[in-house]
Image (cartoon, rainbow, N blue to C red):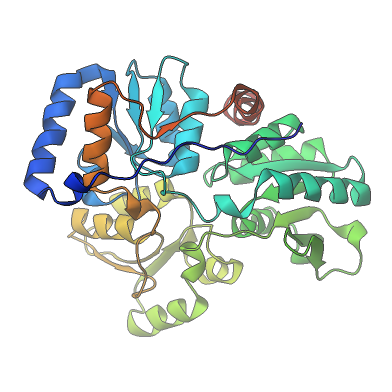
Length: 368
């Protein structure tokens, strides 16, 4: 199947919203939420700004929010996150529900590192090399087209919470796996399961070649796509060394999208949910250095003032694409839907939806 690239018309934010004061926008949002009631549902990702997350009907990780959205009766799902998250919501919700992304520029650099053309090319070359021994897995932080590719070829999606379980499942199906699009989550998960680095290779979609340190291609079990999260890759071992030097009693906790050496040197590593729960359950007076997105770190600092919390990288900025959703864009999106307009609607074609659903369902219903 030739997977079509998804195109949705991008409408520019009208000038009037750029000139509107915060108090007026907040009042308008509250009014529309009150008027629309159950016809409107606003999911907000953990990495969103506080000015946006305050209006979320549910907050959480991307897949969790898509699942919650699918359980609503709302006609409009105004998704405060990034493009691939809104795609997943459109895949899981019914045809009567419309998913709106307040700013179509809110993408994900990691998801954009694997497109359908590159993946088709990689699959052709890798299967020429390894035959029918490979099963594809994709992180949910990927486009609908990549999820569809994986579903079509017998694979499944994974989250940072269940990646270990899904990789174990994949190895029961095939001798090798192709892990898209985040090499760090794939590597960290495989290492945790006892796969040595010598049995891993990185597929470079630009150079269209395998990069590996082992003796031969035959020993390769895990093929990692050369992709990464631009936020989490900025945490370094030097950051860890500095925290150990300045705050020897701090616990360092990081997301598994961080580099292998950072995860190895941290005290704890886990999903966004894991990090939030660890901080919530930690005793008063405990000290933490967190390696994840800055909006979330700041929120944890504000919500847990009985603990000492810092960012592992003191110079870390919030995710730039997540930050594109702001009060002006949210106000505009809500005023448009309140008038029955479908501005910035995310629509995934049926063929892609069907195949992507296979990948999601293998994870959601069949294997966990």
